[in-house]
Image (cartoon, rainbow, N blue to C red; front, side):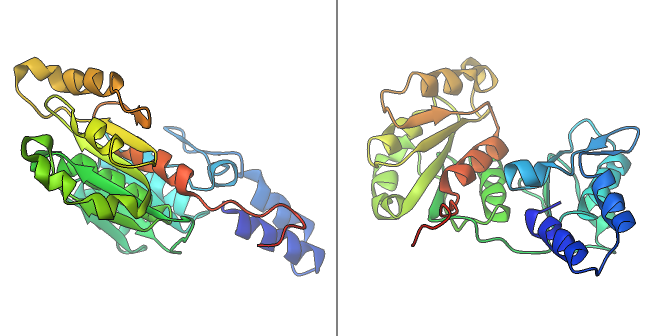
Length: 256
């Protein structure tokens, strides 16, 4: 449940528009809803500011759809990662579900958010890194952030990233996705004074060890504004970038 819905329910109760039983019914499933195969965390939006995200990999389409429907009963927006078109199709009769084939992400945006105070930049070193980059971009967008994307600007052609300095400097935080040796985040980190979230991908030849080479390279970055998430974790990078970029409410009595 999003905070605005809870506030409205409490206001309606105070005004006598709904009774105690209706409030109890509303709050009964607020901590979580037990679906037997999953416990849907309806409290997540109140704690984190965004509903629980569904990780589709390893779940059947029926399980993912069941979790999604339960979540959408309490929240207008939903993000499903590592999923398939079948899930979006099953939801489309009831909700405006969109499947994004490059990143295997499904989104439902019932109430567009504007939580970001600035722009988030998402860059990839190569074209093969775009699926992970798009997962980061979609995550940041559904969480209410303006997102700028710039793909295939790896260090093998250093002039490509240097030509993007103006775009980078317009951002509040950057997500930089790279496979192979994972060098791009260090270069970007040296160009800007903003947080850089590095995402290693499993793209590369054998000695990249499925992204381990890129991960270790990024962890050893000499740029002090670079931090690193797990291999292929575009979602985690987009989520963290959104929290960094989130508007903060003014303290009581403060004047903007």
